[in-house]
Length: 554
Image (cartoon, rainbow, N blue to C red; front, side):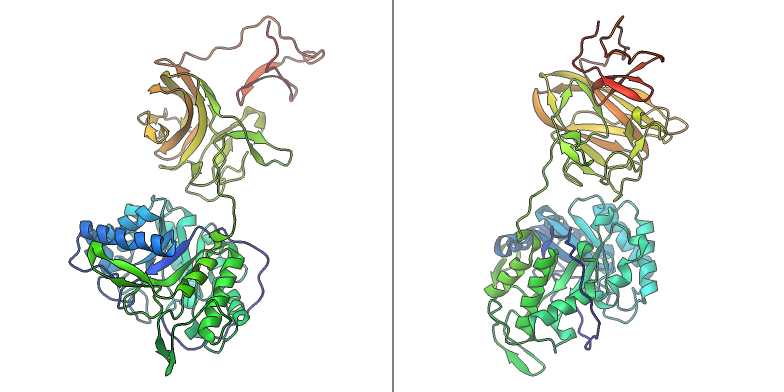
C-alpha cells in the first residue's frame, strides 16, 4: 500500500463477463511497519525470535481465526529477499500453517524506493526457493511483484515474461500479475499473449482520488483499472477506515457502512463491495490484521498461541463478506464419471468404469482442474477430443477412429477415474504407453493411497510406438473408488489402462468367431475389421461402423 497523488484515468464500461476468481475470500496479513521493508518481514503477531514450530503455531492460530471470525478461505502474505533467503525456517512455518487453512497468495514487496529490487540475483533466488518449496502446492499462489510502479509498461511485461520462462511448471492459473503503476492498470499487462492463462491483480484505494464521494463514482473508477479483463482479475488490495482516525486534518469516527454514504470512505466501501459482488471477483481486504492500522478489520490481543482477534467494525465485515463472490449462489464442481458427449459435443456424466476392464486414458472424470485432473498447462495442447486443460493427442491424426491418448505430460500431473471394482481380490494393471524420455511413466492410487510403485514406460525413439507395461497392484476392495493416475517424469503418452484380476494380465487375444450376425450388406465388397474402443466392440468397413455390443457372436 502506498499513498500518492490523485490519479486521473478515463474509464469505459466492461462487457458483461463474470469472473473465475470467486475462489478467493481473502484478507491481507501485514507487518506493523507496512510490508515495504528492507529487512525480514515480521507479520503482526510473529517475532524475529520465532522458529518454524512457533511461527507455525501462531500462524495456525491467526489464520484459523480469520476463518472463524471473518469467514475467509484465503490469506495474502508478503515475501521479500531477506525473509526468504535469511529467515526461511521461521517464515516457512507461517506459510505452511496458512496453506493448511486454504489459499495463500505470496506477493513480493520491495523496499519503499523508486527502483526495482536492490539485487536481481537475490530476487530470482527468492522466487526459486519459493517455487521449489511450494510450486506444486494446490493452495499456493504467486504474485510476482506488488505495485510495480517503478517499471515502464514494457519493462514490466518483460519481467513477467522472464519469470514465466524461468518457472514454467508453476500452473498459470496460480500466478498473479499486478497491473502497471500501483496495480492500477490491468489492461497494460493483460493484452500481452505471453500471459495467457495467468491471473491479474488490481488495487483501489480512497487516497488515490478523495474527490469521489458516490458509490457509482467508485464503481466507475474501479472499472477503469480493470478494463475488459474482469474474468481473470483478483482485487488483491482494497480497504478503508474501520477504526476512528484522522485524514487531512479531518477526524472520522466509526463508520457505518450499512447506511447510505456520507463521505468518500462510506461511498468507497459500499461502491467497491457492490462492484466486486456484481463481477463475482475474488478479493483480499487490506488488511485483515496489521497492528496499529485504522483500516485493519481485526484487532489483536494476547500473544503466541493465545492470540485472539476481535472484529473492529461489524458493518465493515458485513460489506466485505457481501463482496465475496462465492456468497453468490453457485453450483460447486462435482466429480462424475465420464459418459461421452451430448449432441452439442458437451461432455456428460456416465457410469463408473469397471474393474476388471479397460479404461481409455482420455476418459477421465468430469469435474475440472484440481477436481478430476491436474494439468500444468491451461489449454489442451494436443487439441483433440475434450475441451479442458488436459492434453489429448490423436493416435493417428489422419484417422481419428483409431482413438486418442494423453500426451504432453509433465511430472506431477494427474487424472482421476471413478471405478467400480467387481470383487475384493488381487489385481494387476497393463498400461499402454509410449515415450522417448528416460524414466517416464505413471503411478496409481486408489482413494488417495498408492497401490503401485512407478510404472516406467519402455523408452523408444518417439511417442508413437506404444508398449504394454504390466505391474501387480495388490488387493483392492470391492465397490466404488476413485482411481488416480499420476504422471512420473516428463513426456509419456498413455493410450489405455487395463485392469485384470490376478497377479498379471494375460496377453490380449483377438476375437475368434466363425460368423457374426450383422445387418445384410455390411460385409459386402470389402474386408471388414473388428475394433474395440471405449469398451465397445465394432465391426468397421469403409469408414462405417456397426456396434456389436449386445449382439450374438457365433
